[in-house]
Image (cartoon, rainbow, N blue to C red):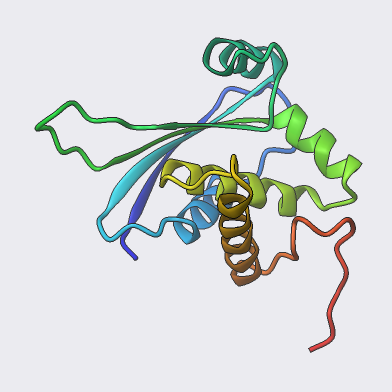
Amino acid sequence: MSALTVDFQNVFEGSGVPEETLLQTWAQAAWLGDHPSEVTIRVVGALESQTLNHEFRGKDKPTNVLSFPFEAPAGITVPLAGDLVICAPVVEHEATEQHKTAAAHWAHMVVHGMLHLQGYDHVEDEDAEVMEALEIRLLAQLGFGNPYEAEETEKDS
């Protein structure tokens, strides 16, 4: 695993956004590449998320995380993974709705987005199983429970 540089942009005017060092830790844990790279994590409000989701995915509503993998022009090698755009109000709402701590859900969104930047997806069931298993393992390494369980439970070890 190689170093990952995180360019952090917080344009959300509100509270509840994790510290930049936490986002860096979570993104680094999910970077599985063999070479150093860079990612931009931009934390936004509902309007910017909805605009981007509509423009790039045809869905006219805000969403938790959008991933934009960097596609270098032919013959150009630049160590950029891409950009993650995380909508703070949606993440906060989902955490409450899913009975998760805010930190656990933020970590999940960062890990989920980072895996998308590296080519993982969940369109097909088989791919979803691979991606979800990887998310569960990475989040466990970070001290978080399985994000796909209805309610997180503490396990005795």
